Length: 142
Length: 191
Image 1 (cartoon, rainbow over the protein chains, first blue to last red):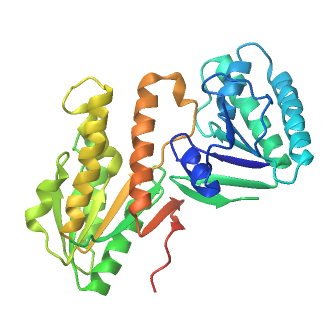
Image 2 (cartoon, rainbow over the protein chains, first blue to last red):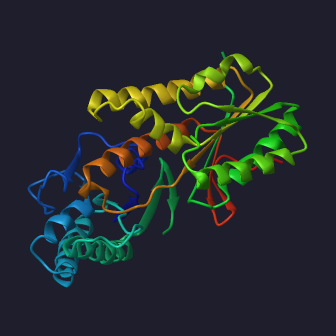
Image 3 (spheres, chains in turn blue, cyan):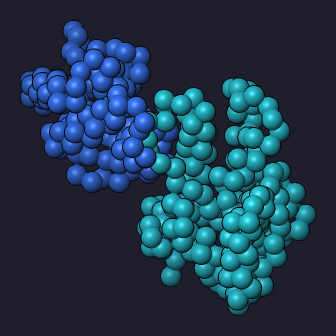
């Protein structure tokens, strides 16, 4: 598992495409498009979960932060099982960092931000590689 | 025509990024026997801004090589006729230039206009680079927060992020200044 984070509009997606030379054999699941972050019948080797922050934002509309964290532990556990099925299986998770601003006014946004922080920590800890992207430049932090 | 060296420097407010950029410019001027130009994009809007500009002006007065100062809050290519191939230009800063280009004309922030502002700034940078020895661009780090909640901040964050990506991609060197300490993010240290 490879977690890629950094601020919004820092070129994370572009970096992932370039780094992996990704082509058609990749399944992109988008949180921004409100797609489900779970497996469908896919025979390829690479899955990109695009927009972890966006999925968590949708979760924050209906769940508390602890439940969101639990939900994502389960989702990621399933992806780890899928990765272990075959050596070539790789799950890449992209999430925008929203943790470095002023405390949001709205309680729901605070919940979103808290949940993002926790889930990002959990995903980073599961990943064998973590990169922070700064205007297209990667810094490998794990 | 060959383009000048490009150096990108960013950091938080009062991180010491302008001071570092000036130091960098003077080093280049000494190393390349160049002439120094300060391209100020800020407008003197209040007393606080005036004081800040004064402080930077004082710093530049104590420089071993004289600076020429140009104040262009928009259309930065106006500096062109005063440059030559030995010129070292410090553009301070990209965020104020973006503010002025975006909000100066009072045009609704729609897709076409945003695209034209992006293109104008990037081609302005390219124009200057064709006529100079080195261009140093200072900009501001923006906070990483839930910007999508506010349409205006979203637009602003997006265009600034895209500008930073485009500049860093072309840059020979890129630095992030943290509490006065420059971190080299791209390129290699000059000996």
